[in-house]
Image 1 (spheres, rainbow, N blue to C red):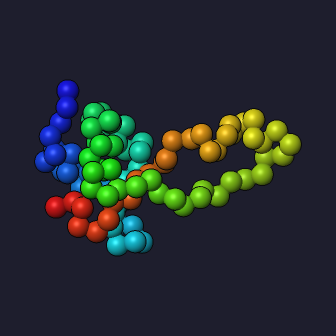
Image 2: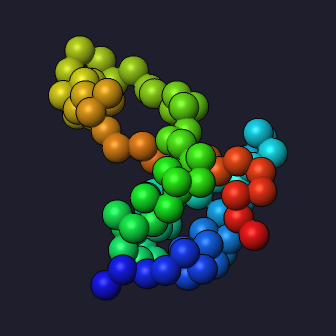
Amino acid sequence: MRIDDLEINALLRRLSRPHSSGGVVVERAAILAAGADFSAVMDWITAHAGAADTAVPVTRNRGLHGSRIDGDSAARAPVRFVLPAGALH
């Protein structure tokens, strides 16, 4: 079931928090946990100039086989998305 723009806007206002850029940031896990149509929410974020957060998470060195434990970090889905100031109303 697709949800409309107003419902997505309300969902993101509820799930977001302030970001240092002046906009807001929303966690991917929060969107998934909300049970909303994830692809519709992602389309909305993209259409409103949202982007994946480019902050590189701090990783711990786990020794010789650390990359096997964590997998390839380049293939991971973004953890959070940043929306510019004024995107949510």
